[in-house]
Image 1 (cartoon, rainbow over the protein chains, first blue to last red):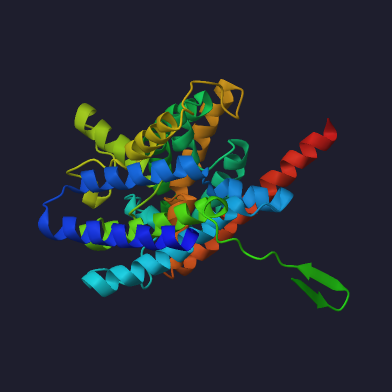
Image 2: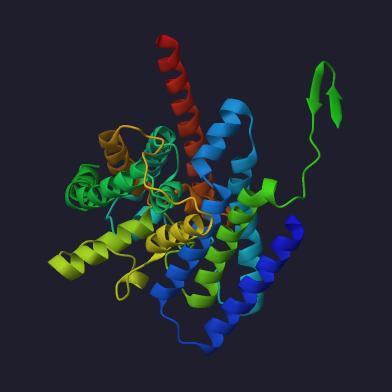
Length: 177
Length: 175
C-alpha cells in the first residue's frame, strides 16, 4: 500500500509539475504556495517532524518520525536525479555556497562553519523544548495550537531582530578577524 | 529476525509496507521530491535546494513584507525579491485544511503550556536557525544533494537534540 501510494505520488507530482512548467506561465510565489499546501496537508496527517523524530528515537527508540527525516534524504536523491533526467536544468550542487551567504551576510568563510554549527546546534537544542521543528510549529499553528501560533509570532519578531541587530554585529565581528 | 554478533544480539523488525506506519516516510520523500521539482522545473534557485525551508522562507517573507510596507532593505533571496515566498502560508493553510477535513481543528493550548515561553522559543530558534540559514528539512535536502557542510551541520543538529534530551532528563532527575 505504501509503495502504491509512493508511486502514485511520484507520477502525479512529476506529470502535473512538468505540465504546469511547460504550458502554464506560473508565478514562483504560487509554486511555493502549492508546495506549502501539499506539505502542510501531509505534515498534519502524518505528524511529521524532524526534531521529534530524532528525539523519539533517542529517548524511546520510536522510529516512526525518524523515517520522515530519512525520507527527505531519499526524496532529495530521487527528486534531484529524476528532475535532472527529465528537464536537464538542475545544476549539480558541487560545493554550493553556504546558506547563510545567500542571506546576504558579508561574513568571512572561515567564520561560517563555526557559526553554522552553533546555529544548527542551538536550533535543535531549543526545538526539542518547543516540541517540534519549525515546520511542525507551522503545522501546529494551522491545527489551532496556541503554542504554535505564539511560536510564529516569536519567529516574526526574531527575524526582525536578526536583521536589525545580529546581521550588523556579525559583519563587525568578522572585520575583527 | 535476530542477528548474533558474539555476545551481542540485534533484533531486526520486518519493515512494514502498510501506508499508515509509513506516512511520515512518505511525507519526507514528498518534501525531497517537491523541493527538487520546485528548483528544477520552476527555477526556484539560487540558492540551491531552496524549494522547501521553514527557516529561510518565513524569514524571506517577513523581510519582503517589511521592505514593501516600511521601505526597509533587509536581505531576500534573489529569486524572491519580486514575488513573496508563500511556503509558510501554504504550510499553515494546508495544515488547517487537513485538520478541518478530519475534524481535528480546535483552538487549544499546545504542548508548550507557557505562552511566553512558546513565544520566546520562536524568537530564539529563528535566530539560531538564521545563523546557519536553513531548517533541518533544507539541511537534509542539501545533504542529499551531496553538500558536505550540510552533512556536518546535520550531525550538529543530531548533537543538539541529544544534548537537549540529556538536559531535560537531568532536570527531571533533579525534581
